[in-house]
Every structure is written in C-alpha cells, then in structure tokens.
Amino acid sequence: MRFTANYSNKVDSKGRVSVPARYRALLEKSEFHGIVVYESFKLPCLEASSREYMDELSQRLTEDFGAFADEKEALAATILGAAFDLPFDGGGRILLPQSLMQFAGITEMAVFVGVGEKILIWEPAQWEAYRTEQRAKAREAAMRLGALRMRAASPAGEGG
Image (tube, rainbow, N blue to C red):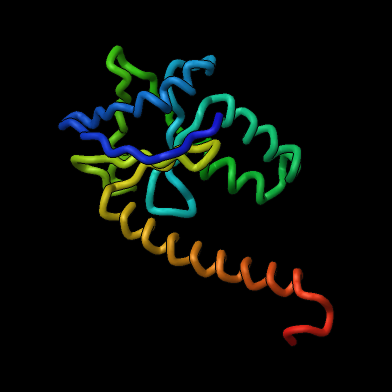
C-alpha cells in the first residue's frame, strides 16, 4: 500500500473522524476493516497503517535486533505497545482515543498525510509548520543534489 496526498477532515465532539475515502479504498485489501493508529515517536503527530504493516514491523524488529535486544524492546514498547486497532464504522470513520488526540493536539480538525506505507495524522497548524520546514529542507537537498550532478557530469579537471 502506498498512501499519498493530504486531506483535512472534521473531528466531531466524540473524537470520530472520517478516514479519507482514497485511503479506505487501499485499506480494503487488509484483513482488518480499519486502521492501526499510534503516537509517532519522532514527530508531534499520530501515525497510522494497515495491520499487515504492523505485523511486518513487529517481525522486522525481532529479525533486525533479536528478540531480547534493548533496541527492539524500546521500539516495540513505543510503537506496538501504544497502538490502537480502530475499526471503520459504517461511514468510514474511526473513533480516536482521547489519549491520541491529546498527544497530537487534535481537536476540531485532523489532517491525514500519506507518506508511502504510513499515514500521518496532524493537528492542522502543526502540519502547516512541519510542511513549511520540510519544504525548506527539501529545497536545500535538491540544490545539493543538483550541484553533485553538475560536478559528476563535468569532465575531470574542469570547474574546480
């Protein structure tokens, strides 16, 4: 599954929010009719994915670190231990637990951002700040890439 684009959806007073139809269509292939949501350990937002992605992540943690490695335990406790299986209701909504909403600062609106195999769920103002920061970093990286390509393309001894 590859999630792309971003969508803003209203969160009701009970914490229900509609998962974008495009994402739900991708998740229909999943054995679980819903989405797994957990606190990001890197960003001030939530992360979400299919149950299959979470199963693969669990397996990779054990394979890459070993069953009893401290790194494996830290990542498993942080991600898997805090993950919620949130089923879709008849309208394609999920009920976000209060603890997740508080962690991400989500109140009235949520922005769903597809980043490949995962979905990030942001409070709108935090998303805009993060997006602006990432665009600046992307511009810098693209400029460095261009400079590297130009150097690699020029014949030896030319241009310094």
